[in-house]
Image: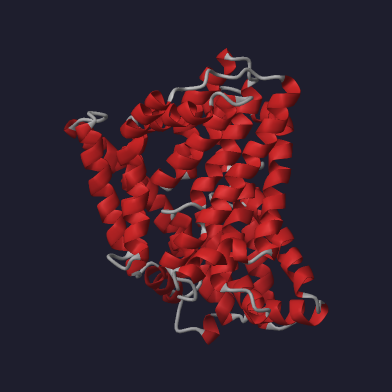
Length: 434
């Protein structure tokens, strides 16, 4: 057995063993990568290679956008933006069968898109909507399921930190601007699909309707939510128009969110040190994940793992549709036990060469990959969004699983549509020549 094969086996066996022992993902990645590198010490300049690759992995101007978008999301989470969005959404759709469930979906989509964080959307919207829905006869488990799945749309609808991470992992094959604009239609499609199932359940179980809001009331709530919604136009519109980069847009998002929060008196100046500290902690976790994941990605390239995977899939299967399906199955499995950030950083270099060889655009694959891994966020055993959503609803994960299954099936159907109908993702980037 060659040293290269032994190195690969040590890498994967150690990594998965550490994950099963519940070692944090970043440490699992770093330890397994280091052990594998030690087997290759005679072919490398030294063990310092891993430190060098970790540092060079985050030496990217585009990554500066992440701490600023995290900070902007934290400011919005602390403020009253969630309530304004919920009231606006309720004025529009509350009169439909199961109206409050639509409000949950729409508010999660809007807040997730504005904050750029699925976790922020889950906690902010779920903590408000679960109690409101229970008062009108909705089971808490159903409300939590709606909140958990709809919150993931914020990872597709820009600004999205994970799309920035994918742009880095793709090695420049996909621009942040193109990914941002490509995420709109799939994100909205996912939200509409969830609403479609909500409508079916609402009619079947005869959930209550709210009263139809007059135009004047809708207009009033819209005016209150307008400046929150305007952030999406300012940030994404500025990037697409070429007025500023994604990194510059993240700084503008922070300034905009801070001014908005102060004007609305959602937070005080004295609250900002705590906001900064919380954002710094979140950023540190994300950046450490990126550091170790980029070191592992470099090791993959060093051991020619992407080329080996590409050759294997292309030689074993001649039909591109079958290969895309297999890659989706692998990513669905990966998403159940690995958080979305390391999964994107580790598996993009492996699968991107395969799909590009088959003619899939890197931007299209980025949207497919993120949507795929969003499903993993809603499933055990890792399921970050699943645990957050259950926590804010004050129910156990086991209570959520049964009502959650139909929503997961819907997400998989949307995933297949986005994967096999490229125009869903690529129409807008081609329209704007991105």
